[in-house]
Amino acid sequence: MSDLKTSVQQQFDRVAANYRTSAVHALGVDLAQTVALADLRGDERVLDAGCGAGHTAAAFAPHVAAVVAVDLTEGMLRQVELLAAERGLANLVTRRGDVESLPFDDAEFDLVVSRYSAHHWPHPAKAVAELRRVLRPGGRVILSDVVGFDNPICDTYLNAIELLRDPSHVRDYTEPEWLAFFTGAGLRAEVVYRWRIQLEFENWTERMATSEVNRAAIRSLYASAPAEVKAAMGISEAGHEFACAVVCGV
Ligand SMILES: C[S@@+](CC[C@H](N)C(=O)[O-])C[C@H]1O[C@@H](n2cnc3c(N)ncnc32)[C@H](O)[C@@H]1O
Image (tube, rainbow, N blue to C red; front, side, top):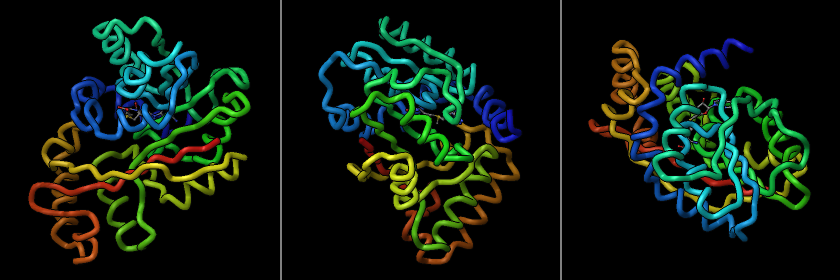
């Protein structure tokens, strides 16, 4: 296991319960939108890759035959089990695994979904190839995440702020990068939905248990950011915004 993946597990194990109650994750406008985009028949077997506390898996479970929620972090899988029990979702099961080396046979799933996990993946091309490997021919991958900027200075500030908040952050990949990863894995891909999320600074840093010194550094970047960065990220005293996108690959 690479140091980075150990860092993901350490980081998320200690804050797993915060992700079960997080409004951004539990109530995001994109969740219902993603289920609708999937155009489900009801008999699908779905993989949720990097399931976190299970909000995406739980949103899909009532509409499909089965959902397997996979994550690197044991603490997160316990949260998924609590959520599934609370909602009576008997067709939602968990499995520990790495998206870059999935513990499944080829072509096991009709649909693979992944939400707000991919910015932790150090080798996204390898991960997307794995998502495709476990997908039946004609199946789909629907991946959503915070996206980076084509503008270099905005992109640098975004990823610096993300890394200060969470040492297991790798990169908010840009939309063109995602399209290239999908195409490289042999998937025909397009961006099918975009939205923005407002992050309240206190809530956002408390959820990840960010250290006081890093919180101060983020505040300092907020203050020193050039006007174009402040505008692009909606930076204010209260917090900032992220641009997010859903990429669908067939
Ligand atoms: C913010 S949470 C995901 C939120 C969740 N998908 C939702 O919709 O609420 C990010 C998750 O990605 C997981 N993760 C990061 N890298 C991973 C990898 N290589 N393989 C599997 N899971 C990974 C982390 O353990 C963490 O639980």
